Image 1 (cartoon, rainbow, N blue to C red):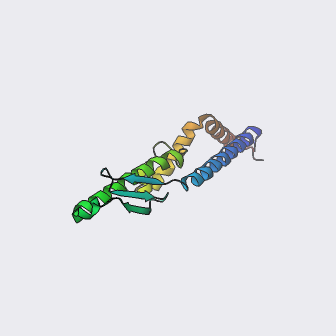
Image 2: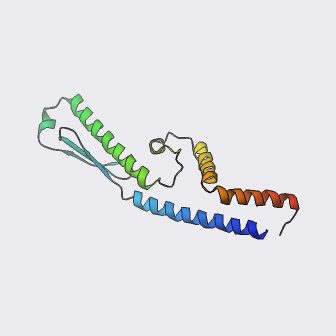
Length: 151
């Protein structure tokens, strides 16, 4: 491998290691994220963990006792939805700050995303973000391929 190509490869490995450390830190931070929401009438409060699982459902006062079942159900589900939106906002800021801009956090959290598209976007964004390193690496690789220089 030529010296410039080797230096570029080492730079890419360092960048990858730095990104890996950043992702690990983000994952640790995300594991501590929680969200809480209270209904507008303060009759229901919902707490969620970082996975979106309900960890607490509290009924305040006695108003919930006089609600029709459909109304109580709506208040509970709306409050859960507000807590989940808050959770997604927090996770998108902490957990996925290094993710490609095109990544839809809500789609990822709900499982409605195309993994292949995400990977393509990450590669394209990585090339754009680290243009000089990747371009230099590609140029040297393509140049070395034609020279027959194999070390």
